[in-house]
Image 1: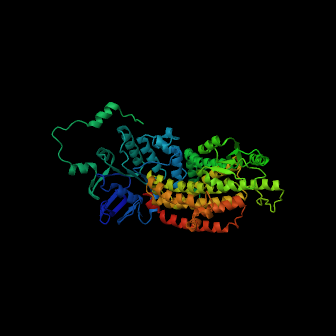
Image 2: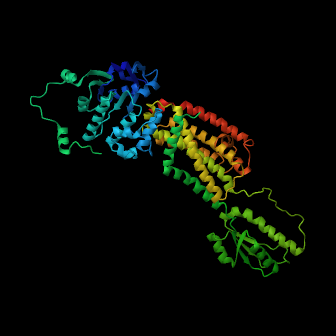
Image 3: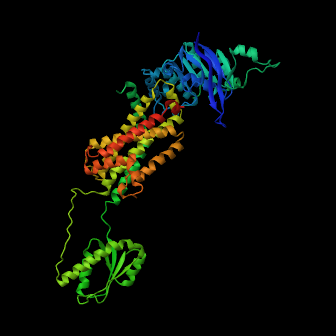
Length: 254
Length: 363
């Protein structure tokens, strides 16, 4: 049962070096994302991943086609959609001088909700940082705090834009666990990533975008089956990340 | 009329602004220093003018004359020989040197006093010469037994003393309101956008009017607190007097804060970077510092710029505040200023509403 539908969604931007001409950053993208799945959008920089998410989140105007979340048209009723979704953006800075608890309470207020900030911090493993300022968090902690902020309205759909970029392997795996946990509780999660391993182990279905179009979609296994070249005769056992983790341990470093 | 959400947002912004201790301190630092410097500089009595006196005559007229000069508080008189005094004049220690000729007595009909001056000090001469002439005339009259036909007596009609600082305070306060309010909305907006905070807020169901209302109310409260500190400093430490009603005074202060917050929102919407808002902000702020009668009355400006100077928002504010503080004017009496403030409030609000497009400002 799809909770998100994209129907020929398009976004047109002027060319950077010629303002009169324009190009399609997102070119007639049609997509259905089922309720309760972790859906990954892959693609090189500039493929249109973030623009697609921003149109769904109401941050960017839709130039062509339409999109709906939980049956609500994104363009016609943006405020109703905003109440349904949780968003973690690539930039994750917040107001100076407010502690994590105060910021979460503020975000709760924006949805006109009374929230239990400490319970949310528990969920993302940050209770001991309750009175810290976001500036004093490590990269992984910041990402987890961003997700906590995105959870204040108990969203049906959670959008994560490159959530593990720049994180060390421990923090990355910790974040994957968090995403799986949220998904296990029934939340639909849409994420963009450059990390192929992340897409493979975390996402139930994947769409690969390039030049504003979806060029392939399916489960990781299906995509590997259809598109991956034959493996070499004697594959290496494990990869460098396995080595790194074996040597430095799985414990979370923050 | 103020929703629960707006109240909570306002309190949050108050918290954010109040915790920015550095900003609070430095925004008060400049006006306090400014008032203190002007308070002391202009508070002193007129410095006595140093003059040298070479008395070559031994007559009673000459000694009367030198006694008259010595008693005059306007002058600090050094008596001595011509040569050393001449050197002091060249060194700038004396403003002028008077040389009384040997034949300076009651019998000489036209005793001539030589005056040695430094051309660089020539501006002071216009002030000194009439006084000298007066003194000589008075001495001459008493010698010849002539009663003066006219006399002038000064009467101060103002009940209180008006110092430059009294004039300056409302101007400094108006200027401070402008600075604090423009920085408080414009610079914050640009900063929040740069950090991606506005984008993050945009994906929540918050309405822009709630966001703006919260910033306006919180920032106005902060500006009021800052002004109260400044006024307390001026009144209790520098002994500046505010004659009119504080209620009327703060009524104008609040309207002024709204105007400059609106202007700040306009600038914050146009400028994309901190550097840009610094530059655009200066274009708005600087001319008003000099043209709005903050430091000296608009009437004393070149006639060419006066029409422009009178219609600047800061002019209406500083004139209104000054009339209340210095003259004890009521709100009714400052209607012309209030009308100008109202017009600017309208203009700035319409402009801010036009320019502050939530989606464009956020992303």
